[in-house]
Image (cartoon, rainbow, N blue to C red):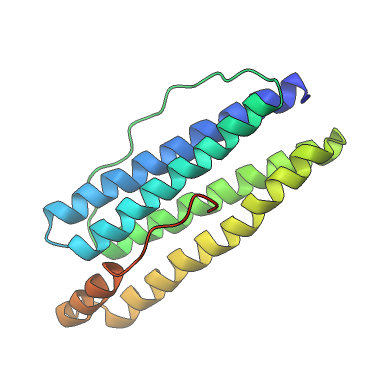
Length: 168
């Protein structure tokens, strides 16, 4: 059983994960509308992954005998000046999610909630990967600059991403 405070914090994290999914779906639509189907594909898979994360939290809260209280999800931005700006927003958002998960870990440790501490470790590790992935894409985009052939090649590479498994 988790505390009411932990229940509320985990419900807030579900909101963050669903917002993340909506953000990636909006970005995917923007890319698709601008002829960047590789980026759109990568972002669509990111949407799927974020929804899996939300459902991991959802299932954990219920398995702990706590209550799910879904919260309003704000609309994400839908227009971006460039792909680089978009992925800088991805990194900024993932850093926000990382900080949010770290706060959950801090709360679980303070409450001596060992089950939640263990549950959250997967997300701590996942966020390292999420931030590194976004930074890698930003580095590539900066490397090619305004060179359209470079953007074309990165777009093609982004289209090769495969879906995460249910364990992701």
